[in-house]
Length: 390
Image (cartoon, rainbow, N blue to C red):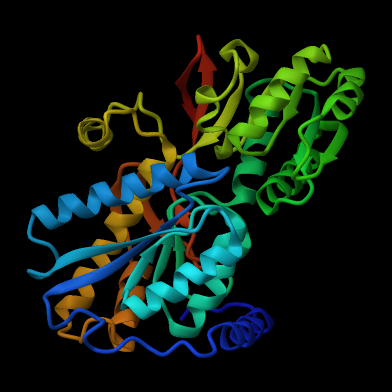
C-alpha cells in the first residue's frame, strides 16, 4: 500500500468510526453475488449550484458502464448502478455514502467537487471502499488511504500550469488573482499559481478574495483594474466566473482571463460570451482532438444525451473505464463480490492502471493522481477551442 500521512489516517479512522456508528456492514445478499450483478455507486450533485458538473459526471460514467454491460459485463455479471444526489453538500454526501454501503455497493465513481469528496474519502477509508473521482482536484483528496483515486488533474498542477502558460506562452509580466477564500479548490489553485509565478518572475500585483456567498465583486475588481495586470487568474466554478466576468467589464478591466477546469460550462451561463472571449483555461480534453477514442466518445455521448460532452463527462467516462477494468481483475481471482479481499483486489488493479482513455494515456503516481498531458482551451468566437497541449 502506498504511504500516506499517519496523522491524517488516524484522524480519518476516528471520524469514520464516529460517523458510521450504527451502520452495519452489508450482507452477502446485499453484495449481489447471488443475483449475478455487481453494484457500483455513482455519487454526484444532480441538483443545486454544482449540478452542471454532477450531471455531466453522472452521464459520462453511466454511458461507459451501460456500454460495458452491453458487451457482457464483468465475467458475465452485469454492473448495477446505484445513484445518489448529494446536492453538492458534504453532509449529504456522507449520508449518501452510508446508504451505498448498506445497499451493498462494491466501488464508487465520485464524488464530484472537492469538499464533499474529502468527507466521503475519510468515511470510505474505514471500509476500504474503492473510489475514483472524475473531478475533485484538491491534493488532499487522495491522502486518506490507497482506496481513493482520481481521473482529473490536481489543484497544484492546474495552478502551476496556468502561471507557467501565462508567463511562457502569453508573455505576461504581471498578474492579478481573484478567488474564493472559503473554497478548497479556489484556494489550492491560487496557492500554486502564486508559488510558480514567484519562481518564474511573473509579478502578482494584486490578490483579492471573496466569500462563498458573495455576488458583488465590484470593490475587488476596481482594485485590480487600478493595477492594470496582463492576466487575471480566476480559479472558480463557471457560475461565479460568469458574474465576475460581467463585473470585470464594468470595472474597465482589460486583462486576459486565465483559469482552471472549473471554467468548463461558463459559456452555458454567461450573459454574453464576449465577456469571456479570449480567456484560457486548463482542461482534461478537447472536443477538437481528432484521436479515434475522443471522436467515438463524442459520437456515443451525443447519441445518448443529445448534447456535446464537456471535460467532466469525459473524465467520468475514463473513471468508469478504469474502475471496470479493475473489477475484471478482481473477478479473475474468484473472490466473493463485495468482500474485503475483493475490494483490495480492485484497489490493487487500479494502482496498476496503464491504459489509453478519452483524456489521454493514464497511469497513476504514488498518490493515486493521473499522469497525463494537460489541454489548454481558449474561448474563441463564443466557443471552446483547442489551443495546445502544455
